[in-house]
Amino acid sequence: MKALPGWLASWKLSAALLLLAALCYLFRVIWSTSAPAPPIADGDPPLICWLIYPALLLNAGFCLWRRLPLLGRDLSARPIAGRCAHRWELKVSVPMDASATTAMLRRLGYRIERCDDGSYWGLRRRWSALGSFLSHAALFPIAFGLLTTSTVRRETSARAVAGDSLTVAQQRFRVDEITPASGRDRPRVTAVQAALGSPDGGRLTAHVNRPRWLSPGTFIRLGGSGYAPRFQLINRAGRTVESAEVKLSAIPASARDSFQLQRSPHRVYVKVLAEKAEEGDLIRPALHTEVYRGSLKLAEGKLVPGVGLEFEGLTLLFSEVRCWGELIVVHDPGVPLLFFGLLLGLSGLLLRVRGRRAELLLSPPDEGGRCTLRGYGDSTLPALGVGRGGAG
Image (cartoon, rainbow, N blue to C red; front, side):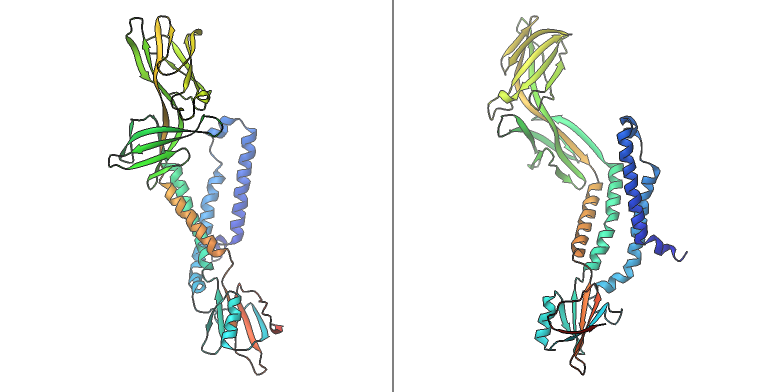
């Protein structure tokens, strides 16, 4: 039982768990390519996949616990010489002039101090051990963030046009405008942005794939978009039988959508001819319109605002065409934890990337005028450019 904590903190267990995780995911990939889609979509991962993650966290936790007592020593500004054995030893002929010796060791990247006995001590990469500790500790906020995301994440969406209001994170916003942007070569919609205003006078802009944070863990982004024409159905007497605004999924250009008239048994099919609109006039495109009763086509025509299409004693016209945007509000408390874990891990890797702590100790010359240079930690045998003796 005494050897159990050491085994739980060993790198061999880490390697075995990572290999097992890779094999588990490889099995899932092979299974997903050979099995029908519904079992993959509805099925849960095997139990072993859920056991690997706690085992990895347990391994990392024991590793950090065993490393914690040594962290203070590795981060200390005092030399570890005398508290542990040196890795290598070299007899060198170096003039023990303070300025020359200090300059020589500083060229090797060491911070130099002169000891009371006349020796010189050099240290570099002091914070490397903290980097290794932080990169391992980052696994825990990332794991808790993923767990929180998978269990608590909520997402709501709504199609909105200019003038609509919505409440997000206990704040009420008003959609001021939905603006499409055109491409360089053709006047067609390639991006959409939504301008939102709050009662206190604040204003923010939501873009596709560019979320705006409203609070920690809550953000709003723009999803799909389309055109929202307002139509009028007029009878022979000139009276409006029906009037409404319909939000059509008609972006990109040439997409075809339809809506059912409520006061008559007709379905209207609309195709947006945005590629034929003039530059800067994308929110008022021409509409290729077809009217059906069942499977029978009654009328067809290219309509612009104010131009009507007649069929069976009725006239269909579009008074205006606006853009709508799908505003998606995501509440995900796990995102701050994920960001914190990623920043923590990245900070640790930056501290660790240059290697581990290294020390040099240059002792005063002996009777023969030769100095002893010893290396501790991750120090390597330096190219001093001076006369050497044998390495110990």
